[in-house]
Image 1 (cartoon, rainbow, N blue to C red):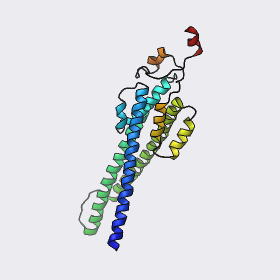
Image 2 (image 1 turned 180 degrees about the vertical axis):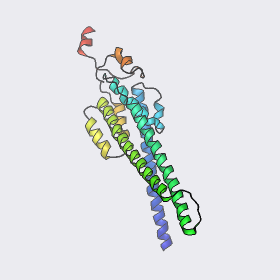
Image 3 (image 1 turned 180 degrees about the horizontal axis):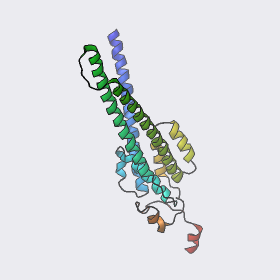
Image 4 (image 1 turned 90 degrees about the horizontal axis):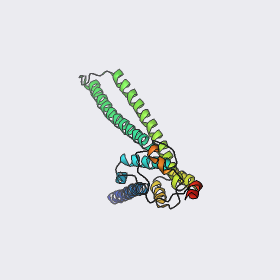
Length: 229
């Protein structure tokens, strides 16, 4: 009976984690598709990078940069997001490596005290200092990760505001409270047919020469241009 109960629990456990894995894969694919479509809409090259970790957040920043450029604003969201992502990842690796090394050293010291043989040269003070360093690294990683998350939501809002100005606040609030819903809102933005606010096409190269001109995007002309026509 106990064996049958354990089998049922194992099946439920695998089913739940299998479902979560499928949901995660679906969100990942939707996110990549949304980045690809937004890049195509704004004529940003290499939209396929939206399917590659780290690169996808850079492309998201590029979309926000392009949206701001079309409104006469020069931003560097892409570079900032990429920098914060790399720093967070680097600090994460440092914390893991330092914790692993500290665990081995502490284990050797424990064996040393039990057997009386000298297995490690590092005194207890060195272990304490190493532990403090790990804590500081962890706090640094946590701080940078928080900054990355906040900055990422700022980028989301810029994109939402550009394509769906009336729904931008609602999209942002739902994105904060419902994890994984961002790709759906990005796809809605990519499918939007609302006119893009007026911009001076002659100044795009000056605002942000990294981007090409916009293709297949309706442009809302200014009254002055309409009179000239």
